[in-house]
Length: 517
Image (cartoon, rainbow, N blue to C red):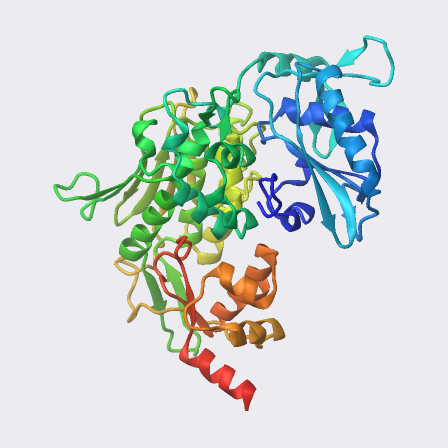
């Protein structure tokens, strides 16, 4: 949310780091007909992805932006924005008004049009808005193209009439006072938004509408469900049993002894707290030494990356109208994650069993947006592929994905690694270790080390080195320094905590001293 009025930084938008390419369209110049049809398609939100963005003033090739931008004449902006308002009244039915924000980018003026998913679909637009004729069509997005909805697609679009995903609906049982300014500000700071510096002075309704977590008419605004899930201290007040239950059976599910812990809080904190608890208490690394070679095998009973992906996806895709928790069951033999209901029926049972599930439509389009900004998920139907990749890298048995014909539940079963600590197959001496990778220290990392002044947050470090692109900063600066053991986290057991800070290690301090000498 780097640009006031947009729910995302312009850097992330133009590089496709948070928004999928099918939700982006670039226009070299102002073309009211093409823009109108794409606005209509984003409003229809055929796949429940959350609408999209049109960037005017940047040429595209094969769906990708061509930089530097061509730009617009700043004197045109007022005329274009008035034209967008007119089109929303006269050329789309029902009326629909996107938000347009002028942005200066690489020395040029561009116009970003944010078209969130509409609440009264299906929408249709004039085929030619410059003519007085009455020919209208329904438009949808197909991959990175805007097309007319025809045949089965049109029937399916009509079947979505006035249906809005649960997380994007207004909650008339709540008030704007139920949204926590502190949680909103923490979120904005974590994602590196300039809006964080202004939010304390803005009315909650203004902030809420800019973040699209408030809806309804100006005389009667209400928070949306997504706002209460993300920015209320106790979402379970509005959505009963919004929680993660972690249950450990040391003697197996039939034993008399078990440990249980419930996690209830705003969604990002709930995910991080549950993952931190699982990581600290139930994930163990094993080293197996071999007499015939110096290299040892390192493995985990359950790889963290796979567990993280499965649990985040359970929170993302569960129904918040079903009063059942997301449950994590752990035994010496397996770790199971259970959520309700199951996948959309557009995914076949064969694809689910094979671990190739790719959803055509998301149950919670807004949760995905926020989790992507927090880098907790990608939201591109990559979850199962990431799980399988993490499992393969650890050498664990294949995970099992289960549901029933009614799609009433979804279960991911992770068998324990057969050579992990506690397994009957382990005959070698084992110990818990932290694996380290030594790499050449880059100029970016050296620059980061010199910027340190005690413990510093991610946002403070980004400002210190002059970086605005959060993803690029993480990849080239922060993650590289952590991997080389040059810096460390203040909260290593909660790596994605919003209050996380970083500090130099002894190795990092020596590196800085050496560079000064």
